Length: 198
Image 1 (cartoon, rainbow, N blue to C red):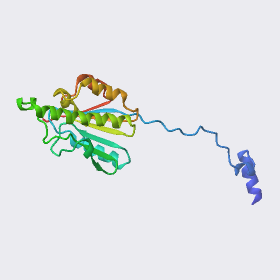
Image 2 (image 1 turned 30 degrees about the vertical axis):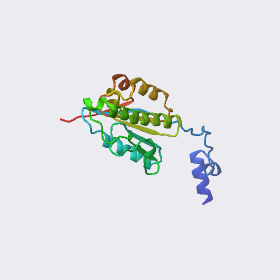
Image 3 (image 1 turned 45 degrees about the horizontal axis):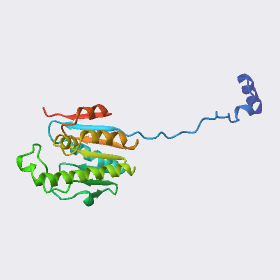
Image 4 (image 1 turned 180 degrees about the vertical axis):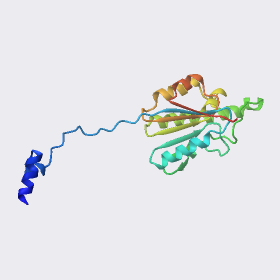
């Protein structure tokens, strides 16, 4: 049997002891983790209705361990405000302004009164809360629902939104929803999803 091994080894041009030895593996650089880069995403439509898609994405992210904040600027009705946030999945914070009803798309004469000032303050409080949470650098994803309409109705300044996007932590995703997203903000987006009704 030893004769056969040596004959086969001679035919291959190697000795039996070298054939069974391990070959050295070339040294490779260790893998390095790449830092995550946050994106600006816009979900827009000519009508209200893109929020359900964004909500499911936010719930999924929170379920996978991300810290998520959802702020619905024109959806009242529960007198919630920044101090009454709803927490879901342990990592999703969901809040609305402390106003009695949802705000309409058009402002009537009635809304130009004291009630309007109360709504402005409630929405400003919500906006300030979102800015504070971003500066704490603990939010992985923030959803600003109907932010375009809040700007077009005069509750939030377009430049303030642009400043928020530019100064957010680099790992934080910002998702903007609703109609009337300003063109300058659209130019800043990494991804735009438009919901159409045919």
